[in-house]
Image (cartoon, rainbow, N blue to C red):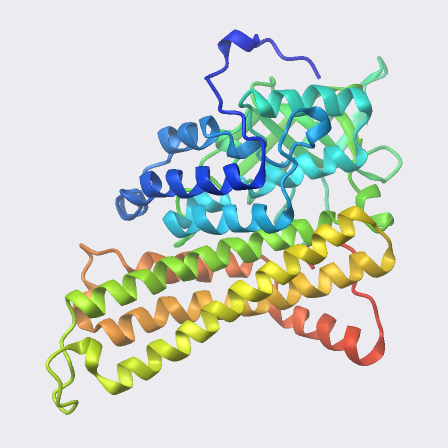
Length: 404
C-alpha cells in the first residue's frame, strides 16, 4: 500500500465539495474536451493532457466519502457528470468508469487503513485503471489470473488481462485475481510494479483512445495490505453492480447526446432539403422534423430513466438489502436498454437525416456510431430484457454481478 510519491509531487488538484460544484466543473471541462475530440479519434491520439486536466478538475475524487475529505456526491450527480464528459468525448468519458468502481469497492470492502490511504491518493490526483476482464476463457466471468502466497506474508500475481480500460493512464491497477482458496480478490497494483506490462494493443473501431488493451502480470509482487475482497461485494447485496452499470448507461447517453447535437447542427447548417419536400431548408422538411421529434423523445426518455435509476442506486447505498439492490439493478437495466437503443439510433439517424455530406471523413461523424456500437457491447442487452421481465412477472430478483 506504499507509494514513493510525496504530496508535493502531485499536480494541483481542485477539491470539489458538493454536487453543484461537481456539475459546474464537468460542464466547464466538457467545453475543453469537445474541441479536438474528432481529431483525437481520427488520429488515435491518446488523451494524456486531457486526462491531466480532467484529474486536476477534482472530478475523479467526487465519490470519495465526505468522512475522508471527498464530496461523496449522489449517484444522480455522478451519472450526469459521466454523461456530460462522454458527450464531449465518448472515449474520455469511459476511462474513469473503473476508477469510480474501484473507489466503490474500497468503500465497501476496504479496511479503515486501506480507505484512508487510497482515498487520500485519489483526492491528491492519483488514478485507478483496471485489470478485471480476460479473453479466451469459457465465460466472460471466468478468471485465471492467480494470486499466490509467497511464503513471506505477501503475494505474487501471474496472468493476463484484456479490456484493461484506463490502465495505460493509471497510477494504480486494481486487478481481479483468484487466491489459493479459489476466492476472487481485488489486488491494487502499482502501475510501476516490476513484472507488470501494460500493452497498448486495443484495436477496436470505436472508443479508440480508451487504452483498453492488455495487462500482463509476470510474478508481480503485491503486499497483503493491497488486497481486499472482490467476490464479497456480490455475495451480499451491495450497490457495486448497479453502480458499474449505471456508469455504462451514462456513457451511452453522453454518446447519444453528442450524435444528436451534431445531427441538429448539420441539418440546420449544411444539409439540403429533399426535392419533393417543397421547402427551402432541410430543417423545414416535414419528414425530417418528424424523425427528429421521435429521436428527441427517445433521448429524453433515456435521460429520465438514467436519473430514476441513479436515485434507486442512492437508495440501495443508503440501505443495502436484497430488495433495494434488486430494485436498483432492474432500474439500471431499464436505463441501459434505452441508452443503448438511443445511442445507436442517434448515430445512425445522424447520417440518414444529415445526408451524404455528413459521411465525409473531414467531419468524422461516424465516431459517434462507432463509439456507441463498441461500448454497448460491454454486456448483452438481450439479457437485461430477461432480467426485467422476470423481475416484474415472476418476482425474481436479478443475479448479483457487475454485468447486470
